[in-house]
Length: 307
Image 1 (spheres, rainbow, N blue to C red):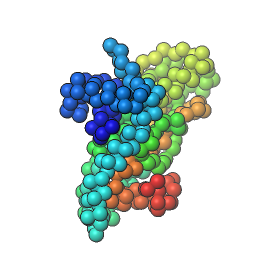
Image 2: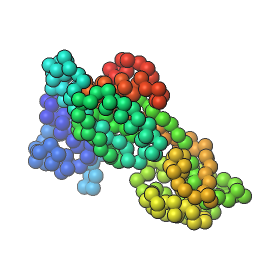
Image 3: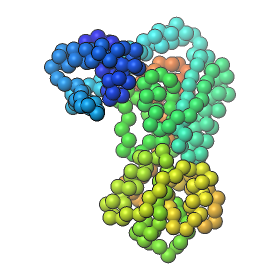
Image 4: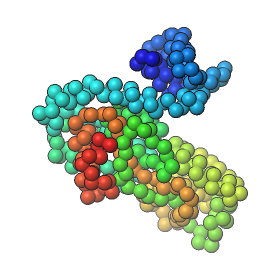
């Protein structure tokens, strides 16, 4: 089994589509299929189940996926390791790319940027780019090396790729926000209000909907986008939505109120995520900067970067 075959497997596993996978690695689809078939023959197991509509990973394919990702991440890191060794005399200059989860509450983003600005003052010769992304994109962004470091909002039960390191920054609860009515119980509130689901927040929406299903509550549901439109909709009577607490704090309106429902898993955690085998020395400097900041909850372990 060679590296190209492993890259073919990884492309199909990540897209679950042979045509898109072939395009992503600049192969024809027949050539890609031949390599996957050869891998399956060599291993003696099926890696994918194929139907006319969909491609699925088998149990064997799912077990191999993180191992393949780790092997290829190590291989991809070799040039960076070599450059790092050559430039070891000066690690305070270089390039670093950071991506921020666009759905994070402003309070969490401010905490990230506070340490980030300190880093920029301390290491002015490091050329840094900052961009935004959706939460769902961070894994592909890191695996493709389009960013060195991502800051994302994760839930308690979110699985993290084993080839990544993570450190937590700040945690806050998800709350149910609504136009104020002190006389309604939680059950009455959930049963009588229209539920505004925020577009792009499917993981939190799913947690709330599962909770409502367990409670046998079926509210009227509408999907909207956030921003000013959210505030306007919430100020109407008979509406409610599920959001991080600090999002609620930024909304203006004396009639607004919120409640914590104590739903398991309904907490958002801002988290720094980076590849274990990314040996960019500027990345190591930034991770250390976050570790030793008084404004974060990260462990003060100088070797955390290498775990």
